[in-house]
Length: 189
Image 1 (tube, one colour):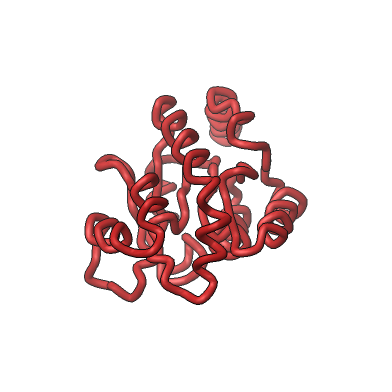
Image 2 (cartoon, rainbow, N blue to C red):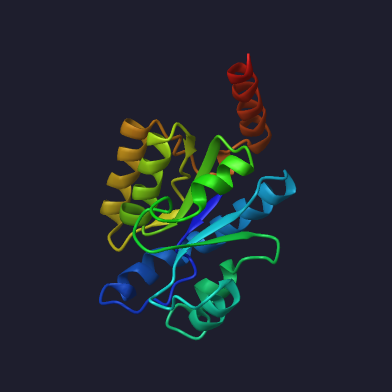
């Protein structure tokens, strides 16, 4: 499960819009994360570093927990055993160790959520699709500054990237794990 840019300082002109649309997804992402962890699905946070290149997970969480979206950040802060990847641009794959990490974990299916749905979530989903991953982008687990932009991004992910955009509470994680296992077995033979 990729959780994108939820550790955020919300320090940009459109931040009030994004905070407004993001608030409703926090509990949905948290619930999905808890369900995923219960099933043994690795949780990978992918995050901007806000120009703080000497930072790490803890420092970024501490910094963002004191900024405008602190309630959102605190709700979704990573657990000690969660992976944390810092990205310099929109896609979680661009100039990051995400590909080797996913390869090492033998992951072929991704559940992608976070902010902004029409930028960083979409760009990461696009790069994942180009690398052959099976994609899930729960419609209630991403937000963009403008709700219509988020809806368009979800439609694009569904139609172009073959992503399943079912709401998070409709995702059968056991079935997703079984399907990923079955697909892996097919590639071995």
